[in-house]
Image 1 (spheres, rainbow, N blue to C red):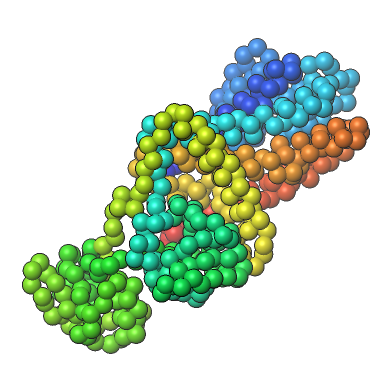
Image 2: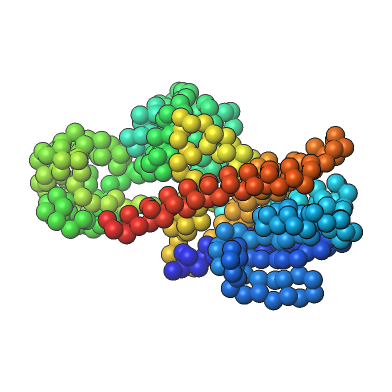
Length: 441
């Protein structure tokens, strides 16, 4: 329930402020706003109240929200008023440049919101990120999919497409969005090129076991009940020093060696407290013992740049722009069929399932800022029904001097809404199906 509450809160903040951007610009140019709704009121609304000329309400369907402007064909598909003579307070009566500003008002507010949140966060709690330099001091450990892509345990990623990334989370994203990864391997520089098929395999596994820090110790954090590790007598806190009498340095070395002993018996040299203990174990058919290695605390890798307000302002602008660029790159990745990234586009249901199950204001505000830039980018897309679609036709009108007829505008809007509703049905359907499957299994 906390995850649902978080996504509803985030969506409510974003939708209200996005629609307020349209509302305030419409009022600036004296356009009548007939409705202002949080969520969609298809058929009926949960709450509504008319104040002045505007009906304010909350719909029952949490799919965004809208403002209905007089004299505009929008999501409501109300074309009746368009058959009458245009009135001075209607959207269609205003000059193209004013209509363009109204259409872009929501996007502008989304960008300003992200900039404002980042400014406040950076100047209060600080600019936090996982340090690439710290996390790969011993090199990196790659899972099966990472090694298949051409990486090797111990590699240090120097740059992606010639650019070094100080944030580790961003660096792993850069790897998927870039073309050439330069790594340091045994003192030499090596280029790794990822194909679209390889990127698709990494995405399909949601990045799990693709790359992580290279642990210098194999320390038992927990043991799976009735597993081979449990039967062998491994305990929390045990430090595994050798396998079949051969010592190793890194946890990934241990995993690699033990994977070669599937359904086989092995001996482990374990440091328990101050005593060395010898244990016998039977490796399972997957090449595992059944224990979880102790991970280092995130704080061991985290950098927190304390910024003054004056420093936070440009840093927030830079971060907002950087996120917008990442959205463009990710959209291009989705359009490349071989990556199959389009299969992993998520609805709010899928996003909510990934949120933490505890209420954390720092996370929520950072996520709201990130989501706000994503919403701005999505609405910039020149798709009929989105702000970008309306803006595109208005820009064409400004250039050519010719305005799209009301009849044609109605057809275009209908086509755009069919596309959007189909995409929403597919993403929501996929996430609802996955939610049901996960509950049943």
